Picture 1 (cartoon, chains in turn green, orange):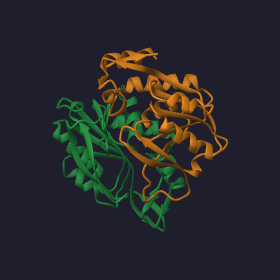
Picture 2 (cartoon, one colour):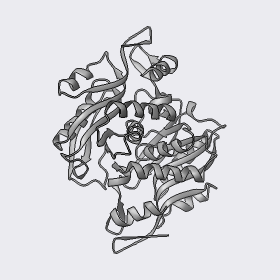
Picture 3 (cartoon, chains in turn yellow, brown):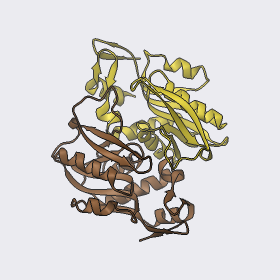
Picture 4 (tube, each protein chain N blue to C red):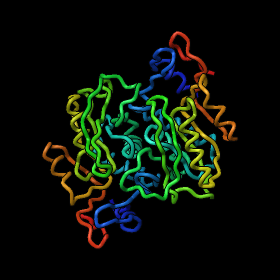
Length: 188
Length: 188
């Protein structure tokens, strides 16, 4: 997606040839106009989805903008911390965050997923693929059809894509960073 | 907001005359059409906002739909857990979650708020007011003008509104539950 790649080229901060910092438009402050353009891209790629599955917190904005462009289909977001309100009737999976260096259990209430759902998985980043694996695991437990996974930024130099593709899931990333040299991201 | 109140009356689960469970359309699964109607309501009430401030995770969807109806103004969401990517140059405030019975530090990078911003604060719930207080604290540290606070569901039988109003902040809630009797919510 040209607009997104241009934005990353011009505005992202790269740290230690490793971390691409896009806090200021993707995952702390949001460029709302870009968020809706991103949703439009995902909606064009996966027009047959009937429900979106994402993970809190930074996947939610892109799930909302994608659902907007898919006739307002419902969104389910996996939760990272069970609250008092959460009952035990949930699907769960373990997700490791390499950024935070913690493993956490993510859950979705069983009542919100069914085998009739055609699930589009949405997330902000694909790096090692752990978050997507967790969401795929949950959707699979529920017997859903998974129509694909839309990710905003892929770190193609990490191992995520293979893990997901090997499960037979189509990945559509809007910007794929395949290398970082001298703190400059190189796109596929 | 009539549509929201009707939805709560017909579909919310009330537990122990205390917890109003709206997981299935507000904070775990999202009714996307309702989410955008809610955003429209907030946008009409606070047309002069230039930036939205919310808190992860369940405030984000409503921030996105509100920003959509306000000519795509930017959104900042306060983060609950500092990651490796977060630097130390942040505003922070402590927020107590009565649902989860934990206090957590919420942060916003200083670069994302300025004294020129006219901030609209958005959140899903107003109960004891702790999350809103934290967001107001952060916006105040940054010297922002706060145009108001939009909350989807207010639990009017708790103490939140007074705390916020006493700071001179206007609150606009779309459904105000002032009492619960026999597990039936009563609206103002």
